[in-house]
Image 1: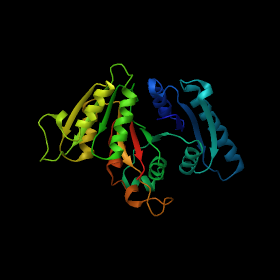
Image 2: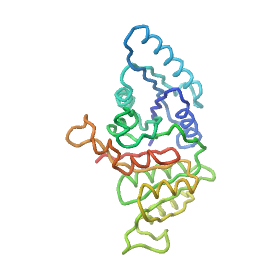
Image 3: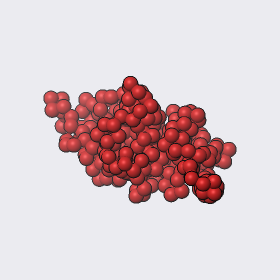
Length: 278
C-alpha cells in the first residue's frame, strides 16, 4: 500500500508531471506527499544564500504545480549532499515510494558523475519510480510487469493490479523472458510462470495480455515496452543493499550489472522498481 510519497524535485518538472499522472489513479488519491529539494553546500555564505533562495523558488514552483490538496503536501528544503539527504528524509517520513529524476547514466558513469538516483536505489529498501530526463510522461493506462517466480516480481504484479483495477481502459502486459523449454507452452496464458499472474488479473477484473520472448532479458523487456507503447514499466527488484555493510555501496551493483540497472538506463518510459527485502 502506498500512503506516503517522497517527491525529490530539481527544477526540471518531470517528477512533478509524473506525480500528477499518478494522482489520476483512484488507488493513489488518498496519498500524501513530501516534496523535497536539496541545496548542496557552497563555499561562501553569499553563495549559500543565493542557492537557498533559488532552491526555495524551485520548491515553491513544484508545490504549486501539484494537482493534490495542499493539506496533503509537506514541502522540505534541506541542505547537504542530495543522495544522503534523500535517504534520510525517506526514512524520516516513512515514505512508501520515492520519485526521482534520472539521467540514465550507464555503468561506471553513474559513479564518476555522482549519480544521486543510482546511489539512492543502491542503498534504500523502498520502491523507487525513476523518470529519465528525455522521456515523455504520459497518462498511465498501459503497465508492463516482467514476471518470474520471485517474491519481488509478485510484489510488482500485485501493485500493478491495484493501480489498474479502477483505471478505465487500463491494460496490464505480463512478460516472461526465456521460459524453460521443458515447460514452455504454445499458449502464453498457460505458461507456468505467467499462469498465476493471469489468474490474479482475472480476479481483479483487469484486462491483460501475455507476452513470451527469448533473448537478453533487459533488451527484450525494453523492446516490448517500446513496441507496446507502455506508460509505466514495473520491475520487481530485491533489496540491493550489501548484506555485510548496509552503509557501503556494492561496487558490482553500482557498475550496472543487474537487470534493474539495464532497464532503468534503457527503458523509454518511467520505471517503477518495487522492493522486497531479502
